[in-house]
Image 1 (cartoon, protein in one colour):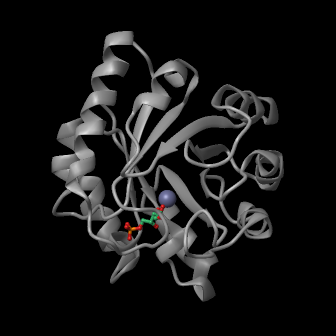
Image 2 (cartoon, helix red, strand yellow; image 1 turned 120 degrees about the horizontal axis):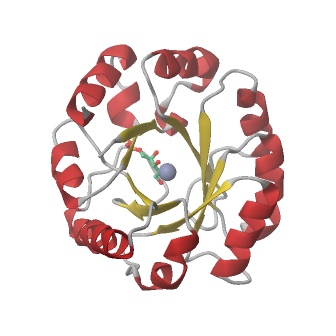
Image 3 (cartoon, helix red, strand yellow; image 1 turned 90 degrees about the horizontal axis):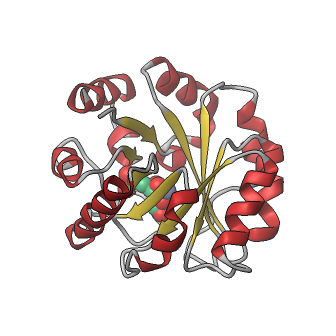
Length: 218
Ligand code: DX5
Ligand code: ZN
């Protein structure tokens, strides 16, 4: 099993974004997690297409764009054109259908992923999981960095692990929200592959934090 660390730049210092992206890249970030929020789907606003395009010039890493927006469908191509390598759409958002979302992400040339918020069961993912590069299990309610992990979401990671293994799929399981050096082992044991961490990477010494995470992920 190879585990991946995906620092979320939501917790980075925006005035030093370029510098800090270089720092996480140098420290071995496997993906760069970019949280896009529209103030409607979630009660917070972050950044959008021009920021992704601007950052693209600074890193060759995989840009993992997590869309927390009400109507993601029409924006998929715009984010891919801006430099997204993977696009994650929430099943709770307004879309023409999940197959259509996956078709569109693939058509644009990116890796497709779907996310479920803490109160959403895995059910909507089951019929389409074979087509997905990644499923994202939110371990906090989307909207803000720095929240406490909701352990009641862990059973869904285990359910997805079982389903993916039974079907012999390569779909990766990502967890996002409240991941720290103290709880990552527990989430890992449930069967997650990719760990998003914002606060726990960017608060304090970034290189040291990255080193400790990488050590725990083996
Ligand atoms: C929450 C975002 C997360 C968040 C993670 O809506 O999707 O990616 O930035 O931050 P931490 O690790 O601080 O919970
Ligand atoms: Zn996220």
